[in-house]
Every structure is written in C-alpha cells, then in structure tokens.
Length: 91
Image 1 (cartoon, rainbow, N blue to C red):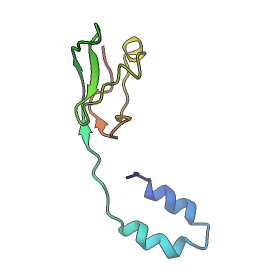
Image 2: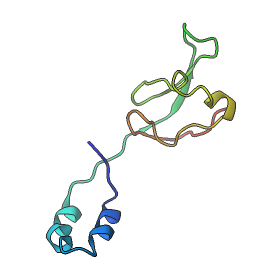
Image 3: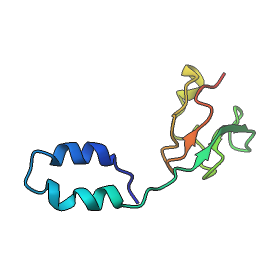
C-alpha cells in the first residue's frame, strides 16, 4: 500500500482534461489510518549501546542509522512501517 496526498494529486490534475473524470473517485476513496508508535531503547546481545526500535513493527534503527546516537534525532515516521512516532528526539 502507498499513502498519497489526494489534495496534491487533485491540484496537479486540475489543469488537465482528466480532472473531472477522476475528481469524484479520488474524493470518495477510503482513507487509511496511519499506525502510531514510539521509539524505545532496548539492551541487545549484539551491541554494547543497545538498540532503538519501533514499537509498531519492532524494527531496530541503530544497525541502519548509527549516527542517531551522535545527533540525538529520530525519524518522525518509521522508515519501515510508516508509523507516526510520538517521540522524535533521543538523548
């Protein structure tokens, strides 16, 4: 599944002859509730620093993004499952 910005799509189509053919379908399309999660820290066997993971999909970030510890900032959305995160800073 891919989430899109329906308003931006309609704005782009507004200047085309397809606008009136698809406007109703786009406006009436079902919406998806984005899952929510939090970044949590857990001690791991494979890292002395532990690991930060998404509570929604349980995917760890520190293996893929080691600079998080240095900068102290996390994604607003999980790059794996798309969950909106409540906590976006770490220190």
